[in-house]
Length: 342
Image (cartoon, rainbow, N blue to C red; front, side, top):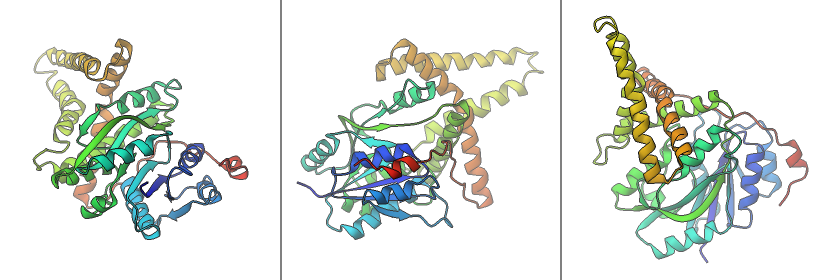
C-alpha cells in the first residue's frame, strides 16, 4: 500500500466543504485543509474532524494555485515520505474507489506524473449553469495536456518543477502540466469516476463572473507559455478576442460605410454555434438538446472571457495583480460544526 496524503482547499464553501472533507477521511493517510480567509465556520469544522488546517496569510492575494502550493509543502513537512498526493477542491467530494484506481495507475505507469478521472456535477438538474459544468467536465480518456483541480500526483515530480505557480489567480493546473510535459512527464485521464463537484451556480451573474475568471486565466497562461512549442492557450485566447471584441467592433465600425450590410457579419455567431454543436456531439456524445445548450453558451461566454483577458493585460501594464474573482455565495456551517458526521 502506498502512503497517500491529501490537500483540500477552500474559501466559504460551507456544506460543500463538509461533504469534501468527510469523503476524504479514512481514504488517505494525512489531510491538510488550506483556508483562504473563510468566515463560514470552515476552519472550526475541519479541526473538529482532526484535520490539519493551514490558514493563508491574508496580506497576500488568495488564489487556488497558491493554496495548493502552500498546502502541499505543509503536508510534506508533516509526512515527508509520501508516495502520492491527492489534490481536491473544497466544493468536491471524493468518489469511493477513486484513490485505489489512481494509485494503481501510478504504480503501473512510471512515466505518468499526474492521473485524473471523471469529475461529475453533483446537482446538474438545479440550473442550466450546473448542467454546463457537467458537460464541461466530460473530457476524453487517455493522455491529456492538462488536469483540473482534482488529481493524484507524484510529490517528487511536483517538487522537481517547482510546484504550482503561486502568482496565478487561476489556471494553475494546466500551467503546471505545461512544465511537467516539457520535462517528459505524461498526464493521464483514466476511465474512472473521481469526484462529485457542486458548482452551485444558480444565476447568470455567477456564470458570467466565473467565465471572466477563466478568461483571465487564459490570458495569463498564454502570456507565460504562448511562445512554447505547444502554444499554451494561444488559440483559445485568439478565439476569445475575435468573437468577444474584434467581431463586434468590426460590425459597429463599418455600419455606416457599408450602409448596414455589416450586420450580416453577425451570422458568424450562429454558424460558429452550429460547428460547435456538431463537434460536441461527435467528441463528447452529447444529445441534441445538450449540444445546443452547451454550444450557445460557449458563444455567449466569449464576452465575459474577453473581459477577463482585458483585465489581465490592463493590470499587467499597470504592474498590478488581479484580485481573486469570486462567484459563489457564502454558505454558513454552524449546524455542521455542532454535529460533525464522520
